Amino acid sequence: MARSRGTELPPPLPPEQRTVGQLVAEAVRLYGRHVWWSLAIGLPPAALSVAVASVSRATGIALFVLAGGVVLTASFLGGVVIAHSPPLDRRRLLTAFVVGVLVFAPFSVLVFVYVLPGLAWLALFGLAVPAALVEGLGLRASLARGLRLGRADFVHALGGLCALAIVVVASLFLTALALQNFADNTARVAGFLAGVVISPILFLGAAILYEDQKERLAVKVARTPKGV
Image 1 (cartoon, rainbow, N blue to C red):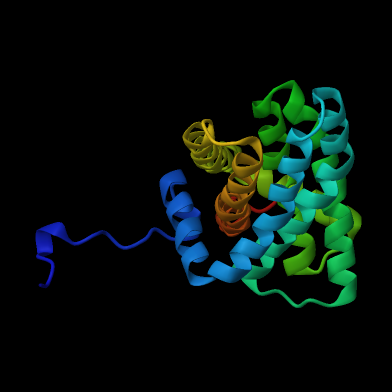
Image 2 (cartoon, rainbow, N blue to C red):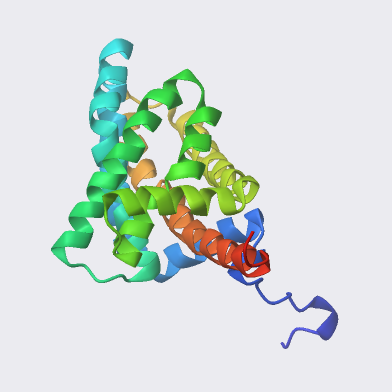
């Protein structure tokens, strides 16, 4: 039955006007179009979370700080490839990977102090990773571009990352509650699978956020009087 005019959904907003809620919805929609590739980028963080949970707190923190940058960079690069289909030449991949490790290494430390400073750091510098891979910039140029993109609309960048993180963490928390009465091994396997399924939303959403901030920066530059 055709939807009446009064109940039709409004068209999606363009990237420069996209809301945080629409960002999350676009991430879920992108996930649905590329399910198997999305699950693949969920494997590394899910494996790391199980490894961290399987050891003592001190060892787990050390493991995350040492390996988190590499693991998160790999998954984020996968999200950028799914979202933007950039050229995958060796130079771009290597530069983007190095940029990612440089960006995510401080995040791996900050997130244990308090989550919000870690997300704020990513909002400011995290988009240097897609800048390197999609735009083919060098190391220093990518970091500078990432900062400009983050500052184009910092409230949107931080709000978007916070919303994505809340969706992922809340989903994982509800899964953990549902599994608390199962045996340890069963709960770990199920928790791992939940991480594989849920965590890609964060990386896909962050990749879409790059387009939002890129368009916002373009609008901001266009509105700035020449010579200012």
